[in-house]
Image (cartoon, rainbow, N blue to C red; front, side, top):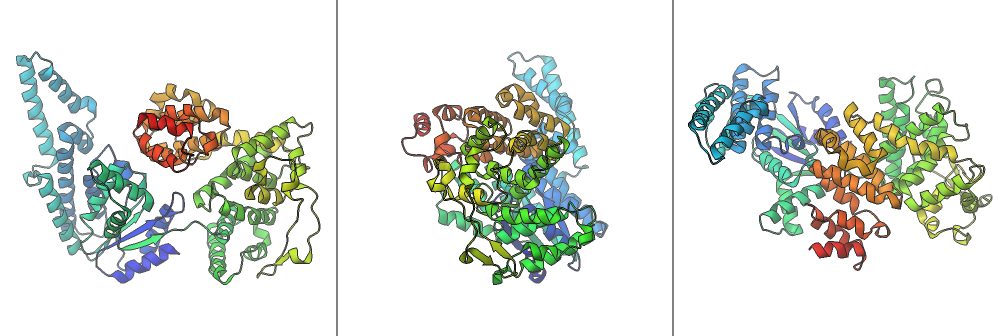
Length: 628
């Protein structure tokens, strides 16, 4: 819906320049919104040129300003509907972008980027030549080699720019000229240019600022629309860091002012509501029905979205309403049972602070459940270990305290028949609901509220008296009479098997499996970690952090060291690491953990984050204080 609203805003804006912000936390659907927006923009007449730019792909390997200018120019050059005169202007912009690389990186690095010549070619010859001139023993051969290298370098540059000396200006002059040529190019076109900027919050602070400043150069050019998708808090962090490096401190008012100057029209994506989650999870299951094709899927989605649009009146998305959107002949026999399971899961997935209605985390939850279900089938596990049982165990493992999970596992594995004595106490003996405990929702469905023995009167640990624990225990199905050994068994293997389902290269999947199997060996896999592409590093880091935050206390040090070692090499993941470490409970932090995090680029930031969450006299804080 937000994508449609943004598209409408673009339509009514005419040729005036416009900058739009799509903000929200990690995983709430910013990238998906841009994809939906790109489809909506195709309906505009005349159809605009839509460009997608991801700045994080260029950090540390390219000049972001040059890459941005080149990305836009190439979109114009590659468009079949643009005449050659306009394309020639765009080609001039590409040449200037290449010169910006030369000016920003020096001859060797720029030629590598612009020509594809590897370091073993002209650049390595330049390094050898430089070494010969600086080793304290300059010979005639060194002088001759230097002259020849300079001559070859000049030839390379001449070929790079096709003999166009005009582009060889100062960086400032080139930027001014690029903006001028960019404006002239768009003025000659009868179409608008819409730039979708994604994953800006994945960049390091310096790259974030460079990308923002690059975009600002074009914000006032007519016929341009910039849509920037990023977590606003991460942008604020980058801006604050940028000015701190420059010796300045920005308060919240100035940070907001900086953001407001960038974004004319802000949109914030909220986390999903309970009704949103029900529809989202339903569509995931609809997508698994072999008899429902893409066209029918769209029809079901549209019908459910219409019902979702009416929830502001107080109506609910009920199982009955969902079943009316599908035909009995096109769904599998367990479809309704799975929808009932979704109804039970949705409130917990919204309320849980670990998931909090985040679409990406919900999808990860459902993917993990699918893997466990598949494992259970392949291992011939009894039918009593149903998907609902697996889902309830998974919910506890994802959203409950690690100590609760460990306590239940020990209780189950120590029993003779795999049935939990702990759950027998917690579930008690349900009683019949009274009249006041029967709810009738606006859709007409009757919902019975079971009343169990009060947990506070039972002989169990305090963790099981939390609001989440109480709701989890009450949630069907009851588990006290179920052999849970199978559910625990598949949960232990599912995370490793799931790595194959993630879109990773074979090499990356192999590395992830190795790290999960032996996190303490991360330092010995430095070479393999270095070979991982930056776009896959985020996926691997996410999997490692999931293990770190959910592991048993004795394993926390190994998992923490594993994540530290990985982020030491893939520094773009350090922001995520700091955020995740700051969420670890005070009772789990030990002095040894803090020692492992000393002398890191992010140590100070982490200590500041923890200072607001750990008791003032906590041993971990004292370790950080000694370094300060």
